[in-house]
Length: 462
Ligand SMILES: Cc1ncc(COP(=O)(O)O)c(C=O)c1O
Image (cartoon, rainbow, N blue to C red; front, side, top):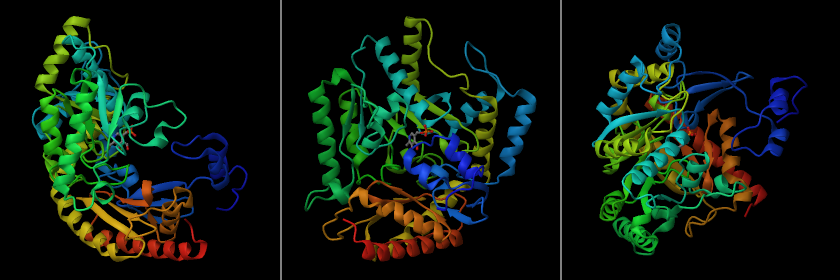
């Protein structure tokens, strides 16, 4: 990237902003890609270049950019009641309407909703609620949380502890005590020779069982998992994984928490990943596509039985002493409600299932490329993993930056595509994408992979 001119937006960004998940020193060298506007599945940078946003931002802009109905609802709600809180028995129409609508579409046995502003806050809150309920039923020591290696649950101190990615822990002294991680359910790298998906699921469920027994079931409160591990590599679990895991959890009185921050609202081709993978969650975390990311809002949905536990603990401790100034913010709630209405009116989940099947079929064509180890996915989420050795399934050294290079090549072909760990190129376009736009996305990715292969032959990375 050229050296930014003084006082340009790039120079001022370097001067004033600290970016999440970015190397600060390198940012000073390369500067930002400044995105100025969006329409449908496309965004434009400040030089007027158009990109197909194959990740819907951070897997969140389900409706694509430029949905005027959401802008209008936000403006109307700001004029009517710009803010009110929900502490101490206060409420307002948008909070009530959104909770009712959400619970009408949520899987059984979810019956009550608590709102926050981000996926991290919602996961943090879920853990606190679990601790609160167990303390209320005289089991204060039942508080350990088990998650999966490569699972992503956020970056607050608690949700980062749940996250199973070392780069989220490094330098922060995390995970906190009492947060445990089990093996990633990924057949491509994790299955033993001759092991079927079912065998792998059986082995992983047995490992979970052994961990709970070793820790003492009286100390283990919950298992939290994304239906599909998204940020950790778009990893679809082996067949029967959740069925077998849930049998283990039930045996030990351990709660099942589904983190649907990415999978929720159509991403997997059903309304929730829980439906796609047969999960019956005691608690479900929602965010991102709940408002198509037009405004921050998240939710913790809990079962009736769990809510009874909150009530009992509330009697014991006086109040439920947790929540946020912006919990169920009226503007955010109104925008989320309108988003859910649009999903329904346009039958967007069925559209995502149909276009998702097409997207998986088109991406599968890349599997024969010498650089591609695995193409995996479900619905409108997928990962294309680039490998050094196809037969041995060996990845490049992360320092070689093969995924980042492919992402840079993508920009040259008008595509924003994000590299995840193991050089997995992640794809989760807006749910509104058409088959024609999927063709464009796959063709651009294919060209970027070809360019990356050429670059590899020149620089010979390890
Ligand atoms: C599955 C999952 N859970 C939680 C989070 C954290 O959400 P947020 O970044 O809104 O805090 C993310 C973010 O990508 C996520 O993918």
